[in-house]
Length: 356
Image (tube, rainbow, N blue to C red):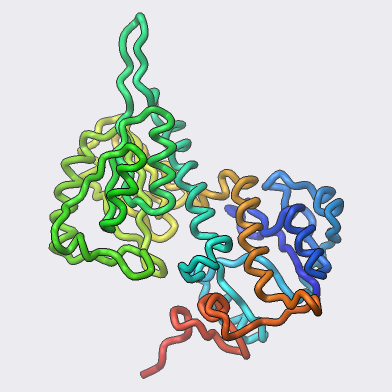
């Protein structure tokens, strides 16, 4: 069994799909590991460390590989079709079911956690004032007011990080369960808590898309709140769909010059109307941060967690007695994450739509 670790060709991707730690674990499964040169350079892992762990560093790593690690299926229809046509069996870690057994493989959570942390760090870098209240002989510096929109994994980490830095933190989310989580971190919950709000969560724990009426009422509440904030961090995403628009240009205009918005959903269209992917926009003194691939901005930590997620997934695909690939197509994790098989795109969310 040959496992290849590719060097990413996307200029914005600084992560790598394996680390020396997981190379050793994959070798223990009976695999030969081949790593493309400089695959880990941007994550602080030189080729020599992969070689010391037992990998072969070679430009031909992917050739004749049984397994190639790394993928993001959203918006890559042509690539999916090409893999299907080539007879590749592909899995997407982003599609893991939310079950206990899959938690150790949960790349969305591991990467979102780091994104939430980094969003606050980036906000602090752009914000021209201190986060905590400081009482000095020269006077008092007021604490920054931070508003986090979306209290999933990224949002909760953003809340915790902003609190650790001394900010006054508020947060909102359409899921009722988020209120207790937000308050447990010491932040105040902001939401229109009507009957629709109480039903606004799927069985899998994701937010449902709300009605136009609720969105309008919530937007009015948020608009009044945003104009009093120093920093807004938006994290709202609906899997497989464009990001919901949460912050309008009018809301941006209501904020004080020097305020900062960090949009973690910018690669899916953005939560903020004025955000631009890969840019920091200055909207009359309000900075709107739209960095791509935010977990990749702390690549060493992101790669370490991502590589462990991938190894945990790979383990269920390998027969430990024969040390060979043995995919159990009845496994619920396998069924949920399979994208291509037998020359076709098989996942219902990505399969070509019928001509009818």
